[in-house]
Amino acid sequence: MNAEMNGGNVAAENGVKALVRRNTGDEKVDYVYKVVVIGDSAVGKTQVLSRFTRNEFCFDSKSTIGVEFQTRTLTIKSKVVKAQIWDTAGQERYRAVTSAYYRGALGAMLVYDITKRETFDHVARWVEELRDHTDNSIVIALIGNKADLEHKRAVPSIDAVEFAETQGLYFFETSALTGDNVETAFFKLLEEIYFVVSKKSLDHDDRKGDPVTLQGLRIDVDGGQDLEISEMKKMSSCSC
Ligand SMILES: Nc1nc2c(ncn2[C@@H]2O[C@H](COP(=O)(O)OP(=O)(O)OP(=O)(O)O)[C@@H](O)[C@H]2O)c(=O)[nH]1
Ligand SMILES: [Mg+2]
Picture 1 (cartoon, helix red, strand yellow):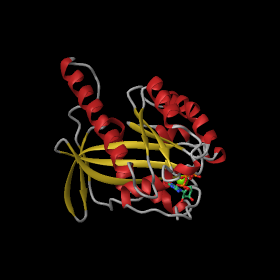
Picture 2 (cartoon, rainbow, N blue to C red):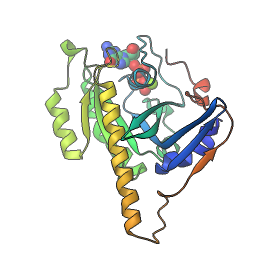
Picture 3 (cartoon, protein in one colour):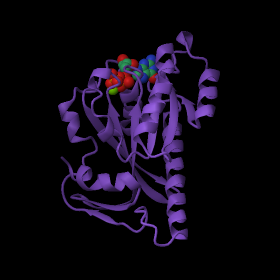
Picture 4 (cartoon, helix red, strand yellow):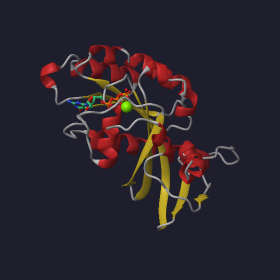
């Protein structure tokens, strides 16, 4: 298990300030945000993630087994934010990991396939599961993926817009294949997480003595390789 998973997870749980040291030299990371990607099998979760973190796409993507995460570091409002994005199988039979998977998540990408109506019909169930296992301040983006397959569309955008509005979700249609909107969706999600975390910190400042742990905790993670793709990936099939 890598250093980030041992020490960084604490940071991810609360979006607290973290200093992650690497063997290759010191790199300051202000925040580590854990984001989970969920949705039915084959909607393109792994490929959306792969597009965002590595700018890669694979046509022959295999179903994910187990859990893996990938990271990408970016700057939001002059802060260095490391997005730690978790991916798992949409298939029921692999979904025994639920609580551990959701623990500490500040954001979620809920993906469906615009060409498969049933993947959209299941979205309400996924939202329920998220609400059951995460903090109610979690930021959720509903993602209609495979937007390049317009000729096969089975879910009108308006249906998703209405659902997103009633549930308070952000909504984007993306294509992992062409890359359309993938960056926009992740950036929006991460920026909103930044605002939520900042607001919580401010609220905490206003209520002195409240034992909220969001502020003032600095974590030093020494040594070890800071793997960009989790060790667990080794246990799972390749995404390609
Ligand atoms: N045309 C098109 N195909 C896509 C897109 N995204 C993913 N795919 C294809 O859809 C299939 C499933 O993609 P995955 O990313 O493996 O799906 P998943 O949601 O991770 O599936 P599980 O791991 O089983 O839960 C693969 O054949 C991908 O190449 C997209 O935006 N457009
Ligand atoms: Mg997958």
